[in-house]
Amino acid sequence: MAGIDFIGSSSGLPLNDLLKNLKQAEMQRLTPYTNDKAKNQAKISSWGKIASGLNALSGSAKKLGEEAFNALTISATKAFTATTATGALAGSHTITVNQLAGNHAIATEGQPDADEKLGEQQGGERTVTIKQANGKEIKVALKDDETSLTSIAKQINKQGGDVTASVVKSDEGYQLIVTSKTSGSDGKMSITVEGDDALAGVIGTDKGNTTEIAEARDAKLEVNGIEYTRSSNTVNDIITGVTLSLNQVSEEGEDKSGPKKAEILTLSPDNSAVKKSLQEFVKNYNALLKEAASASKYVKPEKGSAADGEVTQQNKGNGALVGDSTLRGLVTGLRNGVNDTYGDGEIAALADLGIKIDIATGQMTLDEKKLDGAIEKNGDDLKQLFVGSEDKPGLAEAIGKVISPLVDGEDKDAKGQLADIKKDLEARNKTLDDAIEKMQRQIDTRMDGQRKQFVELDKMISQLNNTSNSLVSLLK
Image (cartoon, rainbow, N blue to C red; front, side, top):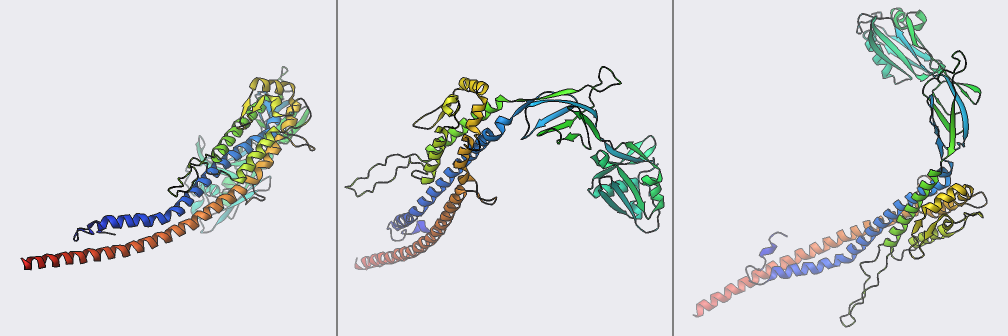
């Protein structure tokens, strides 16, 4: 609407101000749409924060229902390192590492030039086959100009197989080194060449001109008096839930000709994991309820003046989700869950652990001293409270059942009720955007028409003024 500031300059009338006032009045037609969109966006934001809080609380509850009571401390050892997973049990194990697994490696005889072509130059191709004891193999087709040690290594690596190749310069000259990625006897390699006897004489293991520089060696260890052989230095199938990473051969015993010195792997219950998980649960629960309280906050509206015909409006201090039944049901479910009892032992409720719950806000306060005593003396009751049993689920599962419908779907592609709510709100905003765009076009069209009328009015009044001035001049 270029030139709008000049309307009325000819007639001297405030047409420009009038046009601006008319536009402001027209723009008020957009207010209901923009207000609804802002409310929907505030709801999307609030649900997003609550969803994050639910995921955090769900993670804390799962730890209390699964990991925390199964956590173990692991004794320090030299010959091996142990890690635990679900299923590991407290106990002690005597372990001796007698031999580490090794990767098979083969080297060719030294050559004076790494880039010299070592194959027959007859314009054909030859095939290099590297086969391992586990049945894996790679085949590499080489042209005449690809038979140098450098080119052979490049072509082997290009296959992305279970072996690697490199060229090194040693005292004997340039050597091709082929190493198996698979450790142990399963990775033992053989190299053959078809279609080129000259090259076979250089890199073929069946020709006797290569050297085994690293043996395909299996790991050997003894656990609780039983001997085991494994192809890898990572062993996870001997002690349930425990992975052993073999670092070195065990130290020699007092009699160097006798058995090596065994180490004791001790797995003990980690009570600190329970305390840490419970602290995290309380923190995330309080944060979620605080966010829910903010989102559902209600502030009494200010009454409009009946004399002025004003309508009572909702207070702007209200939370975005005030009166929302889904949020109300969530908070009720969570508060019922944490106030319930689980089991029939001395520790059957959160209050027995030293956790106080504010009646008004639902916020938890943790007495760590009382908690430490309960963990030490009533571990089984504590586990019953959170983990539960087949007959009576624990608190962790109860909280999970409240949260799951909101954040988890029935299948891997679904995201729960909150995702559906967000999708619905976004769809509403899309409809509002379309309505706002349509209304804006109508306003622009109307204002263009008004502007043209005002321009014509300005011209007409200007002409009348000029005519009046002319007549006055003639009469003088």
